[in-house]
Length: 337
Image (cartoon, rainbow, N blue to C red; front, side, top):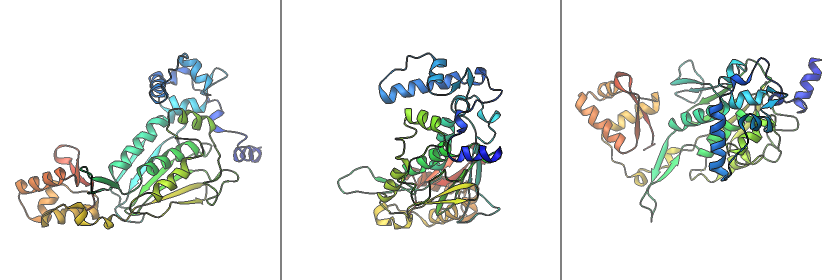
């Protein structure tokens, strides 16, 4: 029986998002999120959804036989992880190019799929490097991110929408290294999908999730996301390597490679830094962050000097302050040579 069930899942005959979520009632629905969805749809399409909220959820597959489906809980549940514990994203930032017992930060994100995507996307974009350069004929600087921003978000969406929710005890894990980001998504490739044909083939393991996400452009166009990821990388000014898709055990791992930010020449950036500031930037590149006290220690300067230097780096939009008070620290926003 288990083998038949697994075969049905592999072939897409049995879909997790279509199944009724056991023990879930309408009380578990966040109706404010449903209102938000209707508002977002109107903003994007210019069309108002007049359908009553409960009927709307039924129309889009979130209510089935008067019960909440797994799609309904994942998309509009107050606490989806109460019923689907694996519905979470863990992001780990490492200081180097390999996994180690030392990491800069680790965050756990929970919530409905819209919030999961937005929270993970915001976090990653807050912790990647952004360089800028002057372009002839333009007054504003051109900002060049370490990774194509579309690719960063689309690969989160892809992991959330196409993961295998039948795989218990697994979650989406995103590992950030100096030279790449790895997206680990539970479940192997669906039937007939391989790393070689993933651009050309279309398949939705969770068709309700995909359709609903598509309605408010969390998925731009069904089947086009991976193709656009490759296009965004090919169009990146610094030409990073194309992403790598692979299957390892019961997971799909997508590797998004960093652009070589050292290619941004100092003459393009035209940023002048003193020796103390350069020391601090080298420290941040190595450790991921720096505190004001550490700035004083590595440069043997006073609190007044460190505050002035750090404020100057923030004005030049090279670093960003995170937090307040004694626990605050600074992270790198721009890569300078």
